[in-house]
Length: 383
Image (tube, rainbow, N blue to C red; front, top):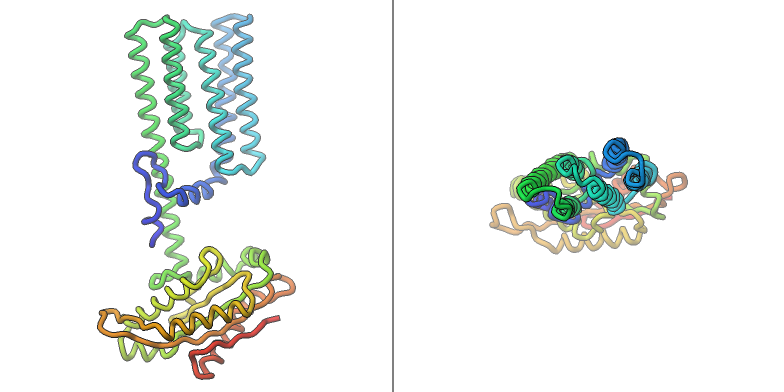
């Protein structure tokens, strides 16, 4: 099943409907999202504090001004702490969203205090709140649900304060409320559109990467994946997390005869059948199954001993020999066998063999199995 079929985008939020797909996307975006959070909070806080000059102009220097200046400094300290975390600490996705939500909630809450202390300027406050809401929707990374809750709740509180102050006539309050509702509506639509576009782009990247690393016939990894993802120094370091590693090289017996006798379409069915069986017997997310050649397959088993590799090969050999593949047109059943070479060694980069050495050893063992009569397993511990 393709990633596109698993990663459907929710129509209301623009986020992936599948929690697993959404989590994978957020982790993929984390290196870009975390610095963006820090920069946006720092930039907005700078202007939030700078607007203290309007408090001074409206109230003069006194107790009211100092109260509002203290509120603005609370915002600066909260956002500053979140900015420091975003730049200096590797945050998880939930922690990053918590930091964004706290900074937004404190800023919006302190803005309500400013509105209460300066009741004659609700038209200007409404404009300021509209700008703040657009920042919340579009520039501070957060979940769609968190953003909606913060934006709509702050709008409702602001309208309630305006009504409670009684400085605006009913028509002005209704007009202001409608304009703020319109701001929320357009902000939510813009955030949803941004969410959808970024996830569609990510989904296309995953599909392209999948196509580049997978064999189109079987869905297994291809040789490119083997060389670029499993044989790099970084991948070798990852293998060192396991004490040992085993590889199983498989080759379908008499495959040329199947193609000559039944046709290439039936040969493809046999290959797909073997690939499905091999994938079902390996550990998803840990083992790697690679289509190594035309009818050859490679299984890389991190943490597996030689005996475990042999056990896998024997189970696969017996199951495949006993199974019958239905031909491409469903007219007959095709039976054949497979030969296996198994090599295992320590995963340590200094003391153990490299993965390519294990594959080379398994390749020789597999051809020994074919020369020894096929439908059998040959194995060796590589020191």
